[in-house]
Image (tube, rainbow, N blue to C red; front, side, top):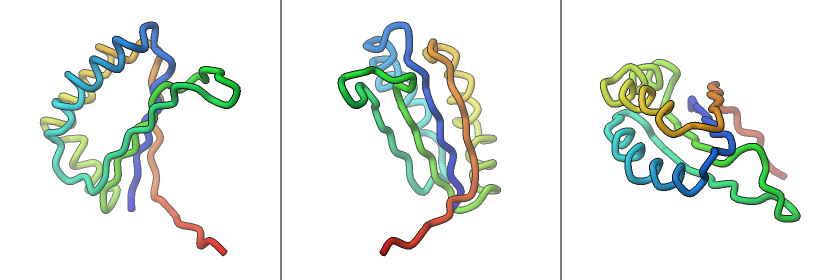
Length: 105
């Protein structure tokens, strides 16, 4: 399984980021076809109530790197990428790779 993790830094206005992401960005990105999974992890506070440097972690999964490349190259993928500067005032980091599962005891 191929995975892209997107780390959105703490925005200037977290409430506006959240509103924009949910009301504008998700509808744009929802048009991407070929993903096998898409999750959001909102990191409002860390241990002790400290707000860490990452506000939102987005994970996208596709069956292969080629499938992920096709998703991102699609019209919806390009539109979603082009929309990121409209709300990511805290910066954004993209990480991509093939997921490897470690068996648990």
